Length: 75
View 1: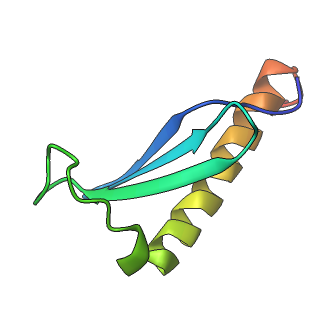
View 2: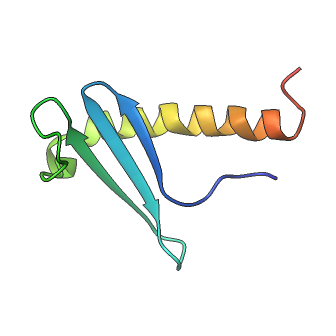
View 3: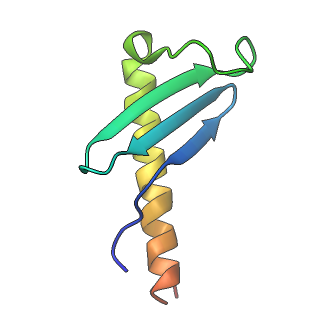
């Protein structure tokens, strides 16, 4: 296994990033501020581009670590 696909959420309180992979391989991101919007009704993507970029990097590092572990390469 060399990657993880699908819908994933990444938390950095109070922020929650959704990274959603559609069937054609396109990724859509959404970000919500949970302390003021617990129902996730206001996607703040256009206001929080730097935060989204940083959270996507953290998510990618974590996913790479999981793939390594799944392949037995984390020793």
